[in-house]
Image (tube, rainbow, N blue to C red; front, side, top):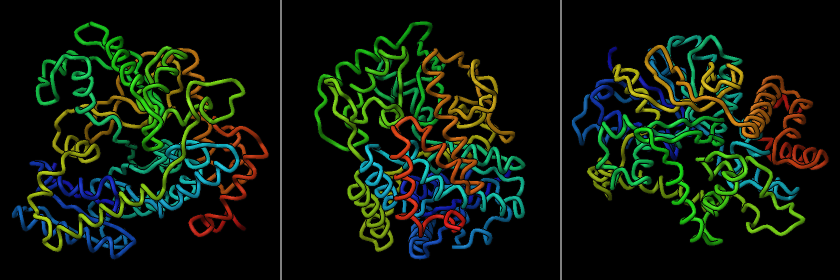
Length: 455
């Protein structure tokens, strides 16, 4: 196909706006295409457009750059639409976590499971479905790629309520081929990522599956040899050094991981989030525990990261930072890697959130899982991974049901379904607390929620 038009809705995204620019400038497949930035914050949009123009001039690039605060202005002709926005994400995640903590529900990230995941979906999914309406009218053949947490809820929302459109969902936690590189280095097959060869890549067989942020390594073999014992030893060494310090997402991850591995017989490989999906570290123990309860998301610290991003962007625009630094600092992104492979027919495999379609044999075909997939312009096709062990299957099903109920509550603005989703959530521990969390969050986040919740 011709070099594609990629529309990024949420140009000021911490994790995607700059990376998309870098890759569309660098890629032979993408550089002759169009990058269109959309952001409702005009000041931020102007900064990203300024950065884009600077880098196009610096590299004498043929890339076409468009921008608008109105998405309908740039959607016509789009081949890919990447959703990467948030409504005051740091602010509201902080509110989600602080109010939930008051009622005994602890979240270290607060944007995928628990009350934080439910209320973030309440803020973002209605906008996503409005974008879908515009895509249906203006560029119905485009691929809609959700890159917004909670990835699974939003992906299910598009699957159920925009089924006439082409869509899938992403998270960068399983970015390929970096994920394989990491395991090859960890297992001692290669001394570093730069030493990994195509032959090594072909010999590594990973079987990973689950809901986004709740995935499990069911098998990891290199040329038939089981690598999980080596990974286990590495985790044990890391756990022995862990201290009660650092960010909520990074704290005690190796130790938490080993406990779940022992309990369920598989390796939970996204522990920074997975520890938030189970009730064991919510602080309700009546017996001694070797691990403390989860610490909660630190909104002020996260805001400093966002502020530093904008300071960096301003530095490039002002000339304080050389554009060559941008070129050397950034690199490939999961979403644009996939777009490049799809558009260029490169035949690469990626982890993509999508319907199961039999990949996990003992789960429903429409279960929305993160799975290694072949992908081209016809979309992703998941590869078989086998079956979930008992226990893990039950955990996954509970989270799936919570996410499905969340979608239906949001689409129908149904407080009964919202309450049911909150009470089914694996880390909410009582009906009165669920009711109190809902009431307090509705009151605190009214400016960010659709009016129909208050009718």
